[in-house]
Length: 257
Image (cartoon, rainbow, N blue to C red):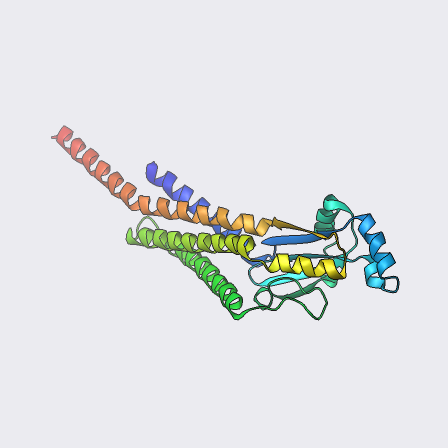
């Protein structure tokens, strides 16, 4: 009974973690950033730059990024609530400009003095992407090994599948932590905000939020670790079940005698 329960839970959590990983890897909503600017600031800009259509209309920038791509587009909204609605509802593919995330620290604002990307950050982002992809592949390999580990096969397949799941979960969790540390420590968004205040709005504010893709990654990593532990417990449960079966058979033989 314990063996059946462990096998079911391991298969369920393993399949769920794979789906969450693919969703996190295939979407670009690890980080969502949007700008806000008050109406009074817009009026001041219109008086300061009477001939600038861009400044008068006050186009605010929205962008979201994942491990591989960073997409941005412009819109006019008012308030943080409207900004979040615009990020989800008016986020049309035809309006977006998407570039590889490792090519720049922050979204391109369209000005010549845009923030340059250092080689170290490019290497870091490429390293994160490689680690995450390796983690996903390890989880997928662990899933295939687990599928092949039918009750009649060697128990070592379960152990190998558990090791793959745990290793993949650790790698994915490390990428999540590195990404969170980079968002908190990096000053690229702050420098980008200062630049935008010069060209768009003196009172411009940046609102930074972790996206749903980022939330999926640690959940998937935890499920991978849990699946790996369950797979490692299956051989022990199988041996215990075989031992109990042998004891019962021996007891039945003694009763017959």
